[in-house]
Length: 313
Ligand SMILES: [Zn+2]
Image (cartoon, rainbow, N blue to C red):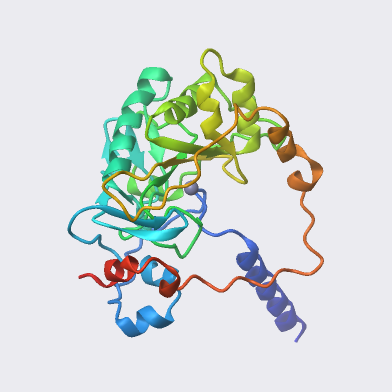
């Protein structure tokens, strides 16, 4: 009896941990098992299932011209392209997630940026994390944005010289760049190449924002020499301590793409950065009354055109 109760308590604890842990971050290992069979989306399912289950189950892009539809955190995409899993200076990680899809402008950015990296740093290339699903939309695990094919996570770990195996792409971890006390980068990990790679991303004319941990922004503010105007695009954000999130702008051929506010202000190295190291931000206290979980986004909450994207054969 006691053993049973202990087992139940252990199971409850595991369930609680699973519920609180943010799932499918860059570090979460993937699998080499074949994916579950794709489910045909019917209008009845489209009306009842959360949008993340609908878009998360789709395996193929729609044919036809590329379109980013809606906003980065509430939208979808048509005519997506897949990034090749191997390029001259990039390799895609976690292939089992099938998230190497994006707008043609995103594919072009990644090809351009990956080619730049070995020229400006000691990195042979980049490791590409999550982009978007074949038709964009919300995901079953991780990410509020990445929905319209204009966001990508790039690991802050250099690509190795050799081609990684399928197994390694599922299990390898990125290297944590931030020091354990979260107040700065880890000097054993951080190198001038990190600065050069992040700068190259931010200097790309198509890139509107690069999100990194505040400790990384602090290091960039300290280490950047010469032209520092690119620093304004690099914004502190929670997490992002072993990858950077790069966001490019809407393109003119996607009239339904909703642009975000342009970045304003200066380098962002002053008081606005100090805020991120205040006690309440570094060690937030859980609220006395836990907030009610938000209802999941439904297809009806999304731009109308996303319905056609989802149901297209
Ligand atoms: Zn991201």
